[in-house]
Amino acid sequence: MMLTALVLVLATTPPPARLQVTPPRPQVTGATGPRVEVAFVLDTTGSMGGLIEGAKRRIWSIARRIGEGRPRPDLRVALVGYRDLGDEYVTRVHDFSGDMDEVFANLSAFRAEGGGDTPEHVSAAMHDAVHRLTWSSGRALRMIVLVGDAPPHMDYQDGFDYRRHVREARQRGIVVESIQCGQDVQTAQVWQEIASLGEGRYAQIDSQGGMPVRVTPADAELARLNRELASTVVAGGSAAERKDTLDKLASRSAMPAPAAAEAAGYYGSAARVAAHDLVDMPAVEQKKALAEPPPALAGKTEAQAMQFLQQQKTRREGLQGKIRQLTKQREQFLAATPSDGFDEKVVGALKEQAQKQGIAY
Image 1 (tube, rainbow, N blue to C red):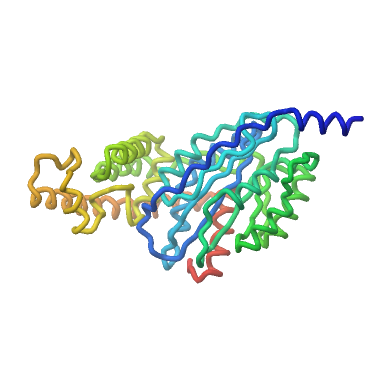
Image 2: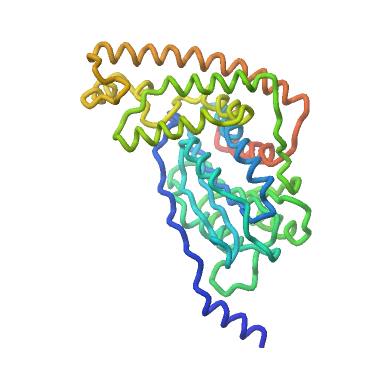
């Protein structure tokens, strides 16, 4: 009788809206090295607030440290947030992007809400990570990182099955890593199984993610340099593209000091500082853009505009040098109190897999 009632509920309850996938964004890293694609599959229910907030602060550090490989990797990141039937959404998918400002904005939009009963719809999340993201088909490191604190629902008759989806990932050359928040025994068993099937590794961290806010003496100056670096960008492209670039720069400049220091560290080493930035374009492309100059170059002759872009580039290189030096000092300060949270587990797993692709650290 109970089984019949459950089937009737599932059959008559309209499924939650499956949100459209955010399409892939253009690359802005400037990297031409080996492709590294990482999809974070995150439980976004109420108990995951500490992990999600910590991830927002540390995503820049994760990206910077992965970018230190040689040859420099072409890093792209996707996000799949998941909850359960009856919540605001079951999955929310943001496709791969090499624009870390875009990744940060998408991650920042996640709020830890919903849940209730312990299991979540892990199987639907794994399906979407494998089948709704635009994975590359060429040579690349492809990785799913599953992060959560609750086991999957196994009582839904909706066709999703995490075991099958993990096997499908491996058939497509995607490694599946699992990171468990907290110490729930049932979750540990499933997460270990997923890592084994996905030929990745399992890790367990504190229930809040193990990423407390860590302040260093270099943060305030790095935050200032972060704002200065953003001011060297000359946004080109269409009016909509210029607005998008400027909005992202404003968001980056408004970050609290510790997060701004992380962002500065990333862009201090990145080959490009923003999408549609004329400063980093080849001279031929810069001259083409001057046919319809952005407001920053309006009224300038071609020679004056090219001189201005070169001045911005020179100024940027000086700022990036200062940022790299301060970031090194900041890392030395943080190394005195080692952490073993989400960011360390992710970087360790990525470096281990990247070395198999010929990327040295």
